Length: 94
Image (cartoon, rainbow, N blue to C red; front, side, top):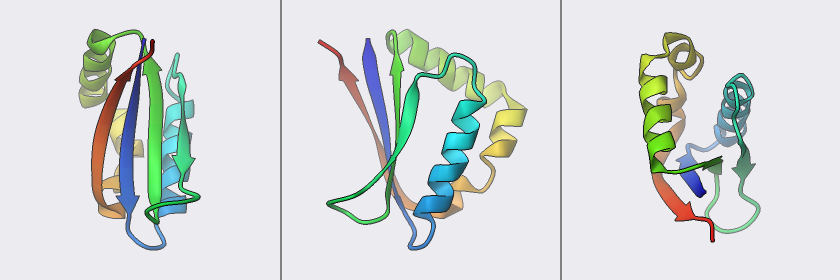
């Protein structure tokens, strides 16, 4: 099992809007196991999308599905303008 954390630093005033967008989109995905987090300490305006998947192959498949899903991409339209920077972390659950 792996945990994927996609960490975004939102532009000022955009973190809440970005978190709500991500939560809404992820709730509409079948078999989604994860959550959307916002910062309480540390760097300001962070939004984290944390998901659990069986393995890296499942992650690769999810990325392919996203690329081919026009409806999902439409729901996420505009999110790239909401953040300044981001990174992806992948952890193995022991």
